[in-house]
Amino acid sequence: MEKKYELLADDCRRAGERTVYRIRALRDFADVRRGDLGGYIEREENLDHQGEAWVADVAQVYGPHGCVRDNGRVSGEAWVLGCVDGDAQICDLVVVSEGAHVGGRSIVCSDEIVGGNAPPPSEPSRAAISPSDAIRFGRKTL
Image 1: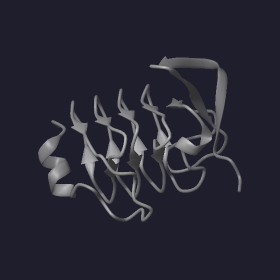
Image 2: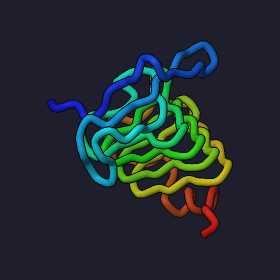
Image 3: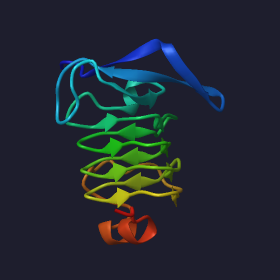
Image 4: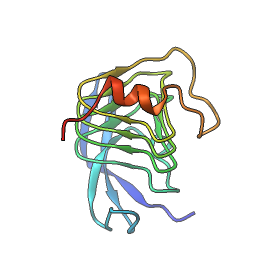
């Protein structure tokens, strides 16, 4: 498997007791170009090298269940400790708490908290919240 990003050891932040590292794209995919800087992750298990998953801006993904996979996107100042997959998009000041799952074609924006108390599901297509709920909970003003 060809890696799509690297962790930058000299560009890191503290997230509570954890250290998160900025990522840099190693190849072109979707709208990301080789050399583009992304957001912050704790370790490679937090962001899949396959698909078009990406963490942008100053968003952070960390913790034992924090993951972005498939075509999931996390941007803005979002914090993800749960799972984002499918074609889901998390942006702005959203917090996806540990045990929460946002998937399918969900879009969660604004300043919302997505809670959960179960480990992330193993099937990437199953969503803990429906797209209509995600829009109702955090509609981004255009």
